[in-house]
Image 1 (cartoon, rainbow, N blue to C red):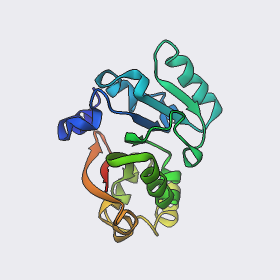
Image 2 (image 1 turned 60 degrees about the vertical axis):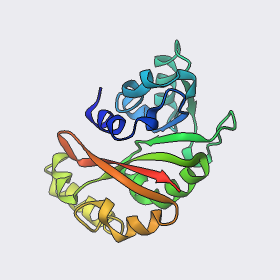
Image 3 (image 1 turned 45 degrees about the vertical axis):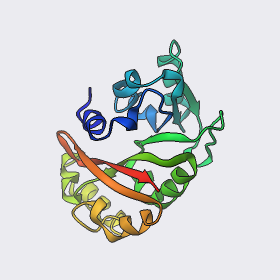
Length: 194
């Protein structure tokens, strides 16, 4: 089991309770390897919904899980409505960095409408801007990140920024975060719907 998922499971077993209904967003980037593959045995497969906006990864996901009861959808998270009309217990959000940084307020608002009260949003976030060096040594790319994300990402860790706190205020409670092993640029934050 992936160490991040193990940390989440250890923190609060009800995040992945057998009957939990989970929406996994952005699953196609690594075809479930960063998320579903690590928790699918902890709950009923028919309660796992994954969505991917890009056609090719969405088709690959459907093919990968074709012998499972996992529901794979090709659609935009911001337009998503649960096909069964259920609210989710957990949303696992592992989307592209640029979408997270540019649309985080929208992610929070949309997640709030899809989650049950006290449900969980597990959000991929960014650690220290200086840790972008784990992705690249290119000063051009590092400068791009620092310039383009400075409005949201102006502290060592985005989770401690006032902007982040303002966005989740009166909507979610920040519970804990976990750094992705060997990749400190990426963190996963656990937020609880209030």
